[in-house]
Each structure stands twice: as structure tokens, then as C-alpha cells.
View 1 (cartoon, rainbow, N blue to C red):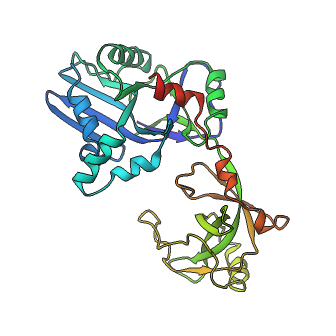
View 2: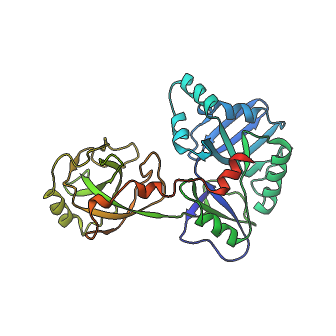
View 3: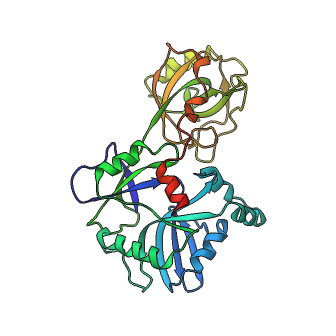
Length: 335
């Protein structure tokens, strides 16, 4: 079951609110000694998290199906980079990481109870107590956690205001709703943040010589401009004039620190070629997550900032909120 992105939490009655964790969504299946972990896309995660396979296999339940979020805590914080490092082809590397930085499964739904009862068609008001019972009786630390929940919007709003960079927002689920695989039957609200970035380069569209995306940079403590992400929210109406403006500023090197590589596998056909620019232009963008001093997703262009000097665009904008919330501390330390 997936979530639809909305601007605000629902204020009518009948909702349950939960933190939206910053990890890998995971369905865990157990039937006897057979265990399978699957991502939201349906792709298998089993070989990348051997410690979780063993933890699920060890559960004193013949059959169970759980929905949750795979997460890894590093230094008292959830680390998405540590999760990504697991997606490695070498089994020896995966095994080593599973011992050094073991994962946990943050549980938020139970689709088949340990007694074999199918709960998919049951309302959340019955599935949640079943999950809480399962957690108390069957799912020991350190590999399992129970995600908090609340029916009070005030508490959910507090989570949303304090998520920092380690939670993905807040999810709202209907208490009378069944589990609907593949449907966007939940609501999610993300806390979006903004940053002022230098435009250090741009890429053309794949099918014509007009700007497709702006490449964004921030200055690190060493004074070098590092590539931190991109924005492609450019309207067709403004592309011709913006292309001419950018082409007049083409000048190497653009980025003096880490530079853009080729397009990622998720780039939907963006051209691999990029043009460096004189560092004169500043834009304000909206983003949701930072991972490894980079915007994890594409950003939304909010406005141009002719009033801001490029030298004022520092990496400290991203580090200001880099602290774990109390919710995460409790999750990691106390379960």
C-alpha cells in the first residue's frame, strides 16, 4: 500500500498518524524456514540483508507477513547511505557490512498474524493491535522496532515540525481502511526545506539544444564549490531565453570541488553532457532530503536570487539540521 503526497495532514476524525521513516520500505514474508524480503517495487532485498533474514527466520511464528521500513543506525542516527552501501554485488562485502552495521525493521503493519489469519482485508483499527501484540510477544530487539502511532493530529504535527533530515515526514492512514496493495490509500506530508545554491552548470534536454536542468553547487569549508544536485522544474516558456542566458556564461571549471558525473539511471533521459558556468547565478530551491552532502532527489526551483552573492551559498545550510530527533533517539536506544 502506497501513499499520496499532500500539502497538509487531514484534520477530520478517523485517522492514524505515523512517522514516515527514512529507509527502504520492506515486506517481510515468513513461511516455516522460508524467508523473503521485498522492496515496494517488488524487487528482492533478501540477499542484501542476511541479518534480517535470520532475524525473521528466528521468529517463533510459523507464518507471518509484515510491512515496515528497513533502517540502519550509525552513531545514533539513521543512515540512508549505510542502506545504499548494502546494494553491492559482492556477497562478502554485504556479509561484512551486515555484521558491522546491522539493520533493523521498523514495523508499522501486520498482514498475516502468527496464527495464520489473513489481515489484509481487516481495518487498521484491528491490524494495529495485532501488530502490537506480535511485537510484544514475538519480535525481540535488536532487529525489530515498533513504529509509534497516534490518533492525535497535534502529536503528528509535532513529529512533522521536528523531523529534521532523518525522517521522511508523516503518514496518515484511515482507521477503518483495509490494506490496499498497489493503491495510494495513505496520505503523506513531507517537511520541505529550502537552500540558496550556485548554478555551476547545466545540462541540455536529451532531444533538443535547450536547457533541461540546472546543476547546483554549494561552497564547502575548503572554499571549493561542490556539486550537490540539480533542478529541472523549468517551464517550456522560459527555456529559450534561459538557454541563451546560460550559454553566454559558459566557462570552465564551474565546480571547483566535486563535479557532476553522467546522468543517473533514474534520470529519465537527461543528456550526459553538462556545461560549466561562471559562478554568478544563485537560485533558491526546495528539497526534502540530504544524503552524503547531496540532495537525494531533484529539487524544485522557487526563485532566482540576484540579491545573494554566490559566496554566501555554503554547505552549512544543509548541516544546520543534521541532528537526530528525540523520536529517533528513542527508536534506536529503547526500541
